[in-house]
Image 1 (cartoon, rainbow, N blue to C red):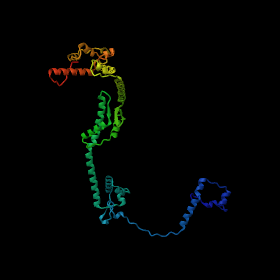
Image 2: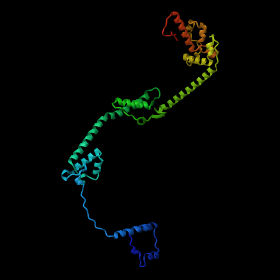
Image 3: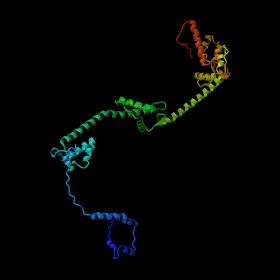
Image 4: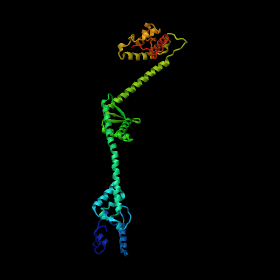
Length: 381
């Protein structure tokens, strides 16, 4: 029964059921489950089986196989050829060999307890071979460690030099420093080769994570397929500089569209002759103004007071007069930079036209002297 209970105590002479009814017996539902029909059937079945007579079995004596088998090579041999483990030193030595060689079979055999209690036996030659295998493994491991020692020292040295390079470059540079991860990986691998590491395989992601953990101020930003490394204090300046570049590109695009529109709208015809103003009439006024502004900025910069001054000392007037292209007064009016915007005349000359006039003067000079100088004579600015 599930609990210790004597059923005879529930019988007052009229039966157990009559006694329970008369005393108005009650029970817990959980206790009722302890006497369900399934458990009663199982109890009856066990009683029926135990009542059957038990056949007498002959006791067999099992012989120990370990006593006739070498636990190292698992080969049977006569007892005279086997030795038994008798000392704790040998037991400890066997465990050391098994752990050094990571021999799973030997470790499983020794995990059942010490070799003395298990009465393990072995061939002397097998034990000697086990010692030799351990010695060979230790020699190979030591030789490999000696070969890897320079490489292991090279990686920390190269990494420390790389960190120093990044920090010093940022401190000594005039502007913000932005590094491409691909360039950093190439530099790191090149330094490892210089330190004696053959064909180093550098993982760019691991190198980036090591740099970010070593330099907290460094940040990684992905741009397309490239990864850029920059310091926090330089990110704002770089973004502002990139925005300025975009703004300048937009302005240049607008200026190009304006010039293109005026060039397409400007109409000029060629009547077969080159009269005095044919070149000037073929060029739009807007293009002339644009070139004049460039020349004025090159000569006078942003100083508005300097515009309109004639370049009489530049040597261009003498070249034009000597070539017979213009009189001194006309040449001086050509070289007046601001007269385009002030008088809006079409007879001003551009830098390209000045170069053509200089080339013509040079050709006339070469024909008269019958010489072919290699360079065009220059005039002092």
